[in-house]
Amino acid sequence: MEKSDKIILFGLGLAVLIFVFLALGARNKNATNKNILIINGEKIKVEIADSPSERKKGLSNRESLAANTGMLFLFKKKDDYSFHMKDMKFPIDLVFIRGNEVIGIIKNLRVPDGDGYIANYLPPAEFDKALEINAGEAEKLGIKRGTIIKDIDKF
Image (cartoon, rainbow, N blue to C red; front, side):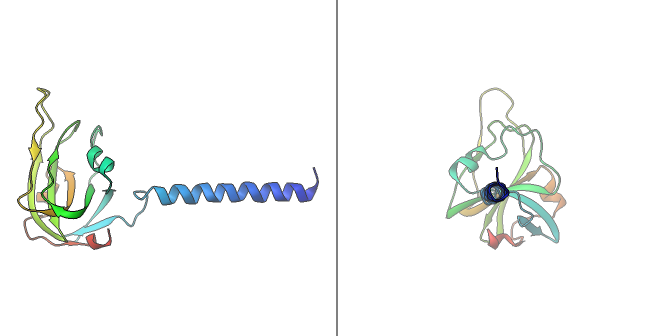
C-alpha cells in the first residue's frame, strides 16, 4: 500500500470517527451540563423526558437518583396529565410547573406496595412541565406553590 493510500484511509477513518462522535452527542440530549435548573439559588441537573416513550419510562426501574438531580418532563401543550409510580424503586417529590412557576407539589410519592394497584397522581391545574426529584428535596429546596424556576425556559 502506498503512502498516499494510507493517508486517504487514515483520513476516512478519522472522518468516520468524528461523524460517530458528533451523531452520538447530538442524540444524547441528556449528556450535557446545560440541563441545569435554578431553584431558590440551588442548581438542579435534569434529564429531559420530552417524547411519549421517555415520559412513559420516566425514572422507572432505576435504583436511585443522585442528590440535586431530577427528571424534567416537557409537554407541547398545557393539560392535566397524570403520573404514576409504575416500576419505581424509590420515593419522589413531583412538582407541577406552568411556564416557569410551580403550581403544585405532591411530596413523598411512595413506591407501589406490590398489591398490583398503581395510583394515578393528578395536578391541581393544567401544566406544561413536571419535575421529579428525590423525596424530601422539594422541602429542602424550599419549593412551594408560586416558586419561580430559573432557566427552565431554555427547554
